[in-house]
Image (cartoon, rainbow over all chains, first blue to last red; front, side, top):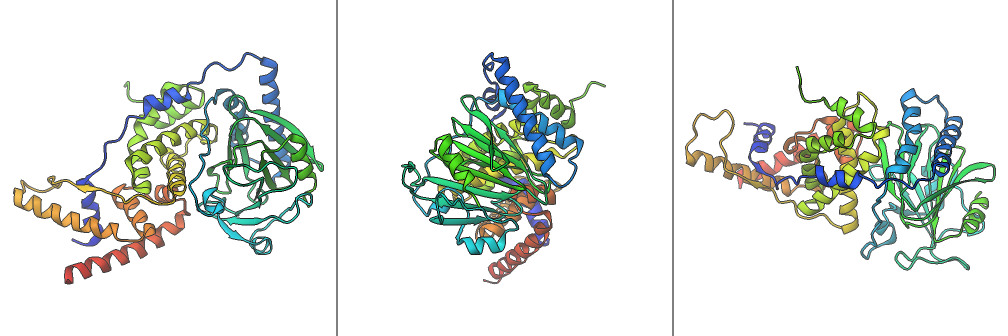
Length: 258
Length: 186
């Protein structure tokens, strides 16, 4: 019997640990209590979702398929259903990049030589203290760059992570990545404009960031700091600014990106 | 004929907000999801968490599921991603422990207890050699042969392009074959 046959036979003999019954538990978690009865508010979210669609459709380089648009429009139904979100847990000790899942440490120059977009750096914060770069399997298809600012005058530093601001950039250009945002109760989405680009200020509870990658595959990433986040769609580059920031602080950082 | 709803029907219903339909999807795929997460994390508790979290996230992501798409790779990608996140948070992978049961092999004509014991011993040794491989080799071999995932599903579970699966698998098999030969010669 050759090796592959022996491996195939092995499958019948493995004693797997018993599979837990997840159906009931998952159902209990997805059964959200009725959303707050504020139709104007919900419709505002719906409008925000629609606005995201319009902006993305305009930005991306190809005409999205009907399914893609349909799936995108559906995002608002998720906004009202989600009531529970995983909280990024404080991580054990170890290098920052590893703890926060940022990828490999690098420098701005090296990162710039490996990604297709121009990496934006906020003049108001200066040069980042650390730079990380991540490619598949952990990062998106065209890579993801994270700038770490450990402390800056006037900005709070997270006691858990020792980080003041995280700026994460990923390309959504050629492959027309679409992102969706799943918001939990107690999280607010507000549209903003940053240097003429569409942005979204998300305040409140921890959240997860979703998008569709180049291959049409679903990707999700936990927002690392579980704090207020400013999302900017900068002509094909999706930028996330995370930190214990006020909206004014986040906008100041964002408008100094160059 | 009144039959079980197809996966496609269940996904369509779940996408319209039918939670009972989604519960049935979970029941259909929980074994695959749990075992895949188990192979990745090496811990039944972590695998349970990852599978549960993965199914909850997949529910939220249902609008991104294209009708007519294969549910297995789609779900596997989400669950395996959860499992890898847990390995990353823990900073290490638990030692995977799979046991071999003394069972009759399908197709064997009334094997003697001795023959079954010999066969189980043989399988244990082979499994031991699989464990000794690097994480990368072990994961691709277990996905393909022990979880019986196809190429697309293996790619989803490992978070690598489908084209990489084949080359990675053949390299892993070559290294395993070498170890089997060494063990036989020893």
